[in-house]
Amino acid sequence: MTAQRRFATAAELAVLEHALPVGLAEGMRELALCMYEALVLTDVRAGTAAPAGQWAEQLATWARLVLAQLQHLAQEMGGRGGLYIAKGLVAQISARDHEMCAKFKGNNYRELAHEYGLTEMRVRQIVDAWQRQRFAARQGVLPGLDAA
Image 1 (spheres, rainbow, N blue to C red):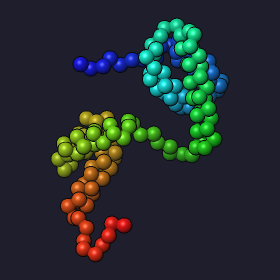
Image 2: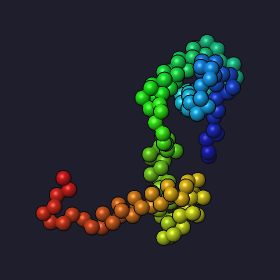
Image 3: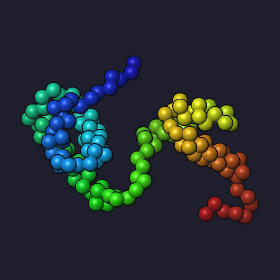
Image 4: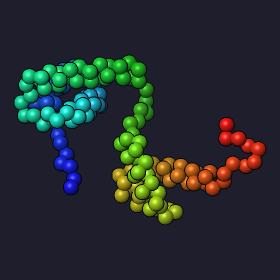
């Protein structure tokens, strides 16, 4: 049985929206909403149409924390070009990568990219790393050469 996907309500998201500074760049706004929603969805109260009491206070606390994180990110990483945020957790990627590499037929990068929602370049990177790892495992360590 598949778990039903939960969503934060408009009222829950509005707590953060009201705290966001006017003129915030769209990408930063999306990042803040994403971080905030991740926090909201960890709580069983997520999905409340009209948050009140302790739940409303918790949402306000998370909104303040997300704004602090956003400010810190802006100060530490702001202005750097090419910031990339990868999709998924390492464990999920690892399982996906293993499955994808098992389906690799020598040149079906485009097909795998389409199937897994990745770019061809990313599929090549994953498959290349997997092939290097397999090669290294077959090679072993030559006598007299330590891995250290």
